[in-house]
Length: 456
Image (cartoon, rainbow, N blue to C red; front, side, top):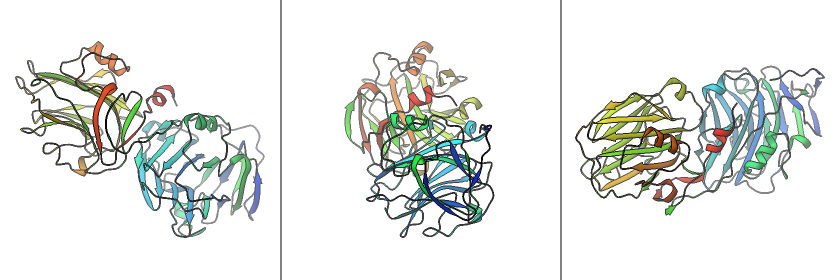
């Protein structure tokens, strides 16, 4: 956080005060641990919420758990809660259910403030969290839920009862500013405006005209440096049979399950003696998970691209596997990963390219041919033809730009695909994809433009 030359601090919370004012350029400081210091935000939705966006800035050196934003009703104390259980995660609660977002290593070690935006919509259940202008892999919870409107909204404490029940071990110590809330998911242009100190109409909570009451030891000071942020437009699809151009879109697998999958419709004309599969994925999973599964009735792991952990890729051909270790630089890189895997029968050479860089080549199943009557699935590992899914191997996150060719691509072609170019005659073509989404799968615009355009 940049230190500004003026130090005019106004103690607004020692005895408690009620105010409605423009706090632009200011911040609430919570100087020490307590179970009393908090800011009550006065806001009254006209009806139950089916979508929202909350944005705020915070700065702290706490490593223990702490609450940032707590929205409670008389029926539910964790109706909406933005909470940090430790320095590595954000927890996002709705109706007392939560999802966790793992913070990239780069952001954990970043000094100063953090800007966070959290959004949710009932129709799809998609929950998003953006940190310093970077989206974390989207999750899902409480699809179809509505958030109660008679609320107690509190900064810096977690409410274990309506307007109270504070625990000193959950309290926030540090600075919070630029708090906004809307009763909808904002467009990218609107969130960019907010991040750049602009205004978006009709906020439920408005930092520039804030109705609040500070209680306990809370200090108001000159605010933190403003950083821009972006949020892409969300357009949902809950599962369908389709053939369409998905350029610029992504499949979101919001929650662990043994049902959510995307079935790709493709039929090789003859057994495969070589191939290349390319796709992008974004996730914060550290457990094993399947990305691409190609099964025949004779062999369940005919082709499989699988991550046993955050550090490795497992590439399976004909139920035989080789393992590729991801470079440390790529493991800690925030956002999406582009991966291409190829194999040829004549030599048995297997290749894996990660973000345009080749990993040391391996060998397996020389002389083998891959069956052509296939079940091809994203997001699950098939232990039988088109089925046999295990929730503990399911993918949670985003997959996009899926292609497959019946040949080994050249390095130049891999680079072209990684830069959104086209290579002729794909068996699976993201720009004309024949697929069926099953279970809890959502189609949204890809966040790739944000990953590539913002550097923090």
